[in-house]
Each structure stands twice: as C-alpha cells, then as structure tokens.
Length: 536
Image (cartoon, rainbow, N blue to C red; front, side, top):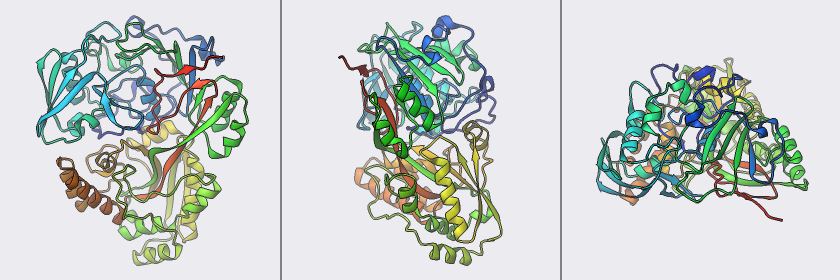
C-alpha cells in the first residue's frame, strides 16, 4: 500500500483496473509480461527502451537504477495505490502539496493555502508551470483533476469524494481556487498531498488503457518507456519549472528477491534496492561499492482478520490470536533484533502512550478460545504475499506455528503478489487471515482511516460503533486538544476489539551504492531530483 494511503472508493466494476491485462493492486504488484510501450509516444515521451534496460551499470554517473520488489500495474495516478507505483510517479508528477523528509506537508504546485471557513480551503497556485505536453497548469487544471477523481464514469479509486468529502472546486481566478467540501476537513492540505495534477486536454482525450502506460505531469522527470516486468525509464524534462536534477536518467526495475537485489548491488547493475532482509546486512556492508541504510518506516505490517468468516467475529477469538503470537521470537529469529511489536494502530507522535502491545500469553489465548467456543477443528488459512514486505512469508509461517501451538489448525498459503493484491484483496476473496502492510501518513486521523468502514482498503469488514463515533468526530474537529482526545478513544476501541493481529512497524533496509548521495526516507518514497553522484 501506498506510503500515503488515502480513503478509496471501490469502483462498481474492476474492469477499469484490469488495464492491458494488468491486475489491480492494493499495495503494489507484478504486472503482465505484455509490453506497454506502443502508441502515442509524442505526448508522453519516446517509448524506445533505454539502454539501461539491459542491466548495464550506469553510464557516466548520470543514471540511477532502482530495484523495487514489484512492477507497477498502472501509471495513471487515479488508479495507483502502491508504494512502488508512487515512487515512479513522484518523480514525474506533482500535487498542490507534498511531504518533505520530516513528514511535514509543504507547498508544491500551490504556494500557500488557508482555511477560510469550516468547509472551504483556498489555495494560491504556482505561476509559470507547464505540463510535459505543453498544457498550462492553472486553476482549470486543478478543477479538472478533482472532477475527474469524483467522476462516476471514470471511477478513479483514490476517491476524494470520501478522502476530503469533496464537493467542488471554485475558480476564483486563474491562479486561485477554493476547494469546497461537504463537511469540515481540518487536515485537507495533508489529505491531498501527492494528489497529482493532470493536464486536462491530454487526460480527457485518451482512453484509460493508454493513460495507464503514458503518464504526463509537471515534475522534473518525464516518462520514456515501460517494458513490463523489466524496467520503467524516465529522463529529465527541460521544461521543468524548478531546479534541474543532477541526474539525466532514472530506471525502476522489479526484482522480488532480496538475494537477487544483493547481487545487483554487488555488480553495480542497481544503485538503490528496496527489498532486503536483516540477514543480508553484514554481507552487503562488506561490499566495496555498497552499504545498507536501515530505518523504521511508517508502515504497519499486520495480519488482517476476515470478518466475513463467522468464526472470526467473536472479539474473544481475535484477542486470543493476538495473545498467541510470540513477537520476540520473530524479532530475534528473523529480524536480527530490529523493531518492536505494534501497540496501537497509530504509528505517529499521536499514538496513545497508555496502550501497550499485546503480550505473548498462550495460556490466556487458549482460555479465550475456550470461552468463545471456537471450533478448534476448523481449518484456518493464513494468506501471505511473497517478497512484498520484510520477511513476509517467513513471519507468516511463524505466526501460523504460534497459532497451531494453542490448538488451532492453521495453514500458511503463500501467494504471488499480483494475484494477492489484485484479484484477492480488491475483490475480497482472502481467507480467514491475511498478512498485509499499510503505509502511514503520520497523523492519527490518517492511520485510523485504515479501519474506517468506508475505506476501500479496509479489507477486514470490521465495523465498531465506538470507533466510528470517535473517528467521525475527529475528522471534523479543528481543536488540537479535542482531536487528541478523540484519537485516543478511537485507538482504544481498535485495541479492545482488534480487527488485526498486530505485528510491527516495519523496518526498511535499502541497499545503496556508496558513491551515491542518497538518504532513504521513512515514508518509503524515492524522490530522486536531489540525488547526485559523488565526485572523485
């Protein structure tokens, strides 16, 4: 899931998402092997595969190759919902606001904003900006972008109609707009961060299948080519309004295995890798040309509990599942001591300090299952992706073993990411338990969104009246003290009536070429416009 998870509206049909054979994704995934580099290149950049697709090391220190765990499914920002896709788009596209490396919201295509009444935010727009196809960025483009997202015909999955309860965009003048909502939205500038602006004529005159593979934005890099399951290539755009990047070319390649990414670092065919495990750190740090940079991300990794299964609806059962997990064994056995178990759904500074993580207590777990009259002979399946998160399959296996130790019958089912995120999660066909991760936006409101009943990626089907009351009030409250009180109440409701087996706030381990001036960000995004090669 995207580091900046938003509320999403599930479309009535998934046909829009199944563009050119690519499966829809909840958090990023492998795409079809069909090449998507044909047609209409004049408006989105040449579709000739770059030389770097072959895997040759960067030439003349003006190229960076990034290996991510999965390929994109689409490059239309109206339908992307994965961190790997966001990493590709963030270098080509821009929103009114964005986040800096300290998780603070900052101006991008807007220069300033203010709240002029409870349901209206006014934005001043940056002047002199053009899209990469030559169209001007102005108030008309902003209005088009929001209207496209809210369109019942296009059915984008980002859904600003629920993200910010969007009503309309009023054009005050060519460089000033009012964004009007149906209810108060105290966090609106945060909620629209990296909501990428689009050129109206271009996006309204091409079919969705074409737009999925030919993005156009206002960013420092522009699209060149996409060879499915091989590479996506971008190059610097001469018409960019801001400072010019030091790099000429960036290439994103999918590679799901940590061992293969380690080899790519060693040979120099990759400069940044994003799928590494703690067990590889010492090996990579011994390489003369590479190192590992680890950090605690904002991503919650957990095991969702499917409320569509009647045997999972009893709160005592779900509490028992949490008591059954020996997190310390996972931490020491798989993660080399990194990380700690989640105590709250909120990972930011807004976390309620009074909430403590579920302790490992298999005796209590057995007691709760007995009180709930859980059918111990029931065969339970725990779905897990492979290679999407740090040691995801291995963690799932340990959790399955812990559950079997308290008398349950759990089988772990590894599933390729494209099927996992595409046809399973988006269609709600997961089994009783499923491992998944969601990226934080570093506010309590946005973390709590993950279990709100209207959030399209709320895959558990959990619905708690106590939570709903606190959360709904939180989303409309401006007073900081009241917001904290409501956030704490919502967090407590999630803890008491768990929709998840709480695991951890994931640590990320990136491999980085030692000659590259690059520091990973805790939000997992990979903006490369400020990255450069060291001079010798």
